[in-house]
Amino acid sequence: MAGTSEPPLVPPVPPDLLFLHPPAVSVVSTVFSSQAIKDSIMTEASPVANEIASLPVVSGASPTLLVPLSSSSAPEDALVENLSEKPGSPSSPSGEVSPKGCPTQGSEFNWLSRSKAARQFPKSSILVTRTEEGVPRVKVPNAVFERGVKAHSDYIVGIFYGNAPSYGKILGVLNYLWGKDRRVTIHNLSKNAFLFYIPSVSLRQRILQHELWRVGDSPFFVTEWKASFSIDPPSLQRAPIWATLDKVSFDLLTDEGLEIISKPLGKIVDAKPFSSVSSVDVKVIVDLTIKLPTIVESERENILVDVLEVTYPWLPPLCPVCNEIGHKANLWTTTRLETRNSLSPARTTGKLRIK
Image (cartoon, rainbow, N blue to C red; front, side):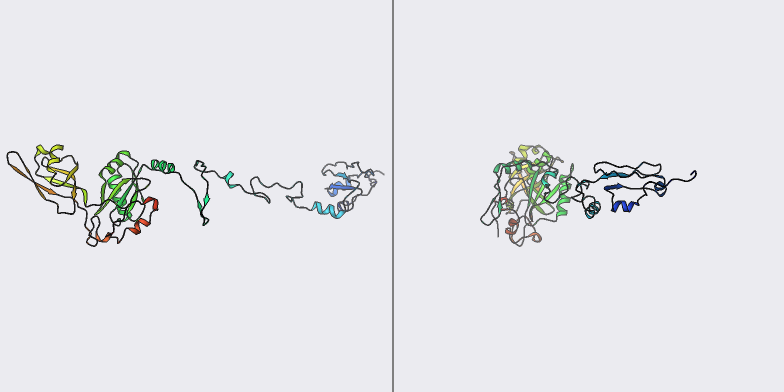
C-alpha cells in the first residue's frame, strides 16, 4: 500500500544482544543511530563459517563488519576478558613498547656506555692488587710522576718560617707584588707551605731567582715544584738581605766597585739600578747571628778614607721564645712535626729542626 513501508524480513537485533549472543559471528563494531536502524535492512547471516556478512552502508550511519568465528570458538567469558584487557599489558599485541634505554625486568642499565666524559683519560694496563688486609693498591710508575712534574711546571712552592699569616693577607700581598698581569692563584699545602700558580715564565724565573720573599714580617722561601721536597725552609742564619749604602763615590757604582765595598757586609748577589749618584741598594748574604755593621769604610791608595753608611730596610725577626730567626712569637710553633704530618710522606724529605 502506498505511504506505508513493508516490515523488515528479519527484525533488528539490539546491539547488546548481538555482542553477548552473536548468531554464529563476532561483532566487531555496531554503531548505529536510531534512525539508521529503522531505515536499514539487515541481511541474514550466512550459515557458512568462513563467509563474511555485511550490512549496507546508510548515509549517516557507521559501517558494521561481521567477522566469522573459527570452528573452535572461545567461550563467551574468555571473549569478554580479552576485550577488557588494558593497553600496554605484556599479553596485548597492540600494547605500547617501553621507551628505548629504560631499564626493564631482566636488563641492566649500562652507565659506562651512556656516560659522556668531559675529558678523555688515557687507558693504562696497571692492575689493581690487594694487600693482606684487603686494601686495594695500584703501583704507579716513576715516569707518571716525572710527567706530572713537567705538567705542573707553572707552580712554585712557598714555605714560611713558622706558622704562615692569614690566607687573605698572603693573597693580597702577593697579588700586589706578582699579580700585575694576572692574579696569583694560591693553594694551601700545610700550615706553613703554599702552592702558587705563576703562568708567566719570566715572572716565575724572577721569583725563583730572589728565593726569599716576605709577607709583612713573615719571610718565606720559594722553590720550584718537585716530585719531593722538604717543607722545612733553609736556615736563615746566613741569608740574602737587602742593604742600602749611602755616601758612595759615583765612580764606585759599577759591578766591580759594588763587589769591593760590599765585602764588609758579606757576599753580594744582586743590586738594583742606582737612583742616586751616591746611594745604591745591594743584596748581600750576611750572617744574621752577629750584629750587622751600620758603617763601613773604603780606603783609597792615597790614604783617603770614605765612610759609607749602611741601613737595612728589613731584617728577619728573631723569636724570643725559641730563639730562632724567621718568625715572631705569635707565629711560633712548638714543633714542625705536626706540620710535616699534614703532607704525604712521599712529599717530605727534610730533617726536623726542633729546639
